[in-house]
Length: 163
Length: 429
Image 1 (cartoon, each protein chain N blue to C red):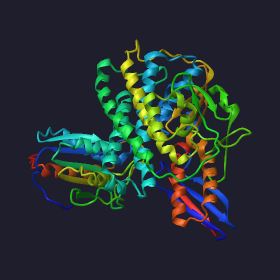
Image 2: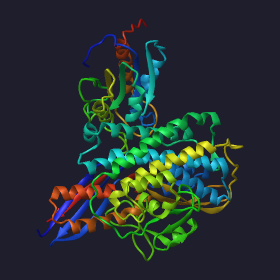
Image 3: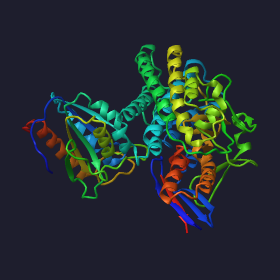
Image 4: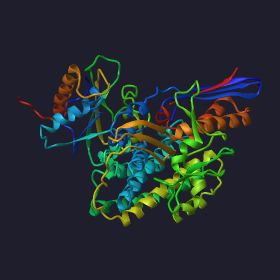
């Protein structure tokens, strides 16, 4: 994992992406739901499909955005990536579109960049999944990685956990 | 030049997985194959033995772009089998959700998939660098369409509120209020879209098509009508199987359709427009005139103008439906199982979508047949390519390949529906 920890400026939006009926593809939603349970006053948490126009609309008033999604990088399951997407494009092959009907997350973010609609600060967490077949539930190593990302996001937010 | 092969392994900017192969031998087009290699999904087979109430949601899974079309054709066919008529505000709500789907599906194709072809960009992202205002506008239109589907259907992809007999929940009048202004804004955007695309450069081409679409006495067709063509076809939907036949071809996982004893035909926006021009709203008709198109439009490249006109039509229609909306007495009319056969055909964004179901007295599906628009257009796509390549043999390989791909995208093919990305091979050996 790379990147800075510390407080993010302004209104913070956390977006979990994925499809919970495609096993590990749902890890972004898992992280969003875990964070929601923490009742964080400084951040709003939403779940989204990753559709480009919807994302741009979601973050139009946000100063900082944290996106969490599953990736297929070929690395070992549970590997966590952290990208400063405001500074550089995401590796497209990690975030391939879930369908040929829509843009993948990397393309959606590039479209937003070209249209000058990226939020001032954008961090993307990618979690390598193991299985993306039909069905619910996460692989143990992916769920564990989800917990790591929850802790990392809390550090991004400057939240200290005492438990 | 004697012979060569044009080959595109995976055609980009289409929905689903497929490829294209064109073989030119002795300066003649020897072979054109639209290859659909996405695996078949056996929907018709696994519907057997399922309860009729499951069909709308199961078949909606055939497509992530036009799930409403599948739900609509399914409910109409099943209601036909069950002798149930859905009328009044419930019928109006069905038309309204269908408007949402046309808007999102057409906006996706016009802006993201097709426009880059005309303006010389590899994709919408490249195009957005120079045409950011129009791309923003397109995304906005798509969002309005998706929003309407999710408002009435519960969610934007594979909505879950449609049922045989009507809906699970219908909106209160007050819920519709914010939509009026949104749709009026979007209508302005749709007008800009028609003007924008009408100035694109269009390759010269005219096909001798038999256009097939639904025709309704008083409405630009969505949900019902007779099946008509510009060559005299005029039949009720229940006679579909008598006039249309599906065939297997060795190189494709999608069945090819043809009109018995007549051959290929064309379904979709161009067919609807040519056969129902008089039923467009005055605003949509005026926009078409302003864009310089009128029936009979035989240039498939201009389908991008027609799609834009249909976005406008759908918005205009949606506004009228909203204004006239009265909350139905009940969200759905009661339906009871009975044995029978039912037929349904509605106008998906890409053209007519036919469903037929046979039910037993418990309401279990004994047999199902589903014919999506893309499989009906396959033969016509191949014929277009054959004619186009034959007339443009002098073009350099990369230019010819580009235009072949563009030709296929004229049809906004949804390969996932047809079985089911496109790969283009142009062979000059």
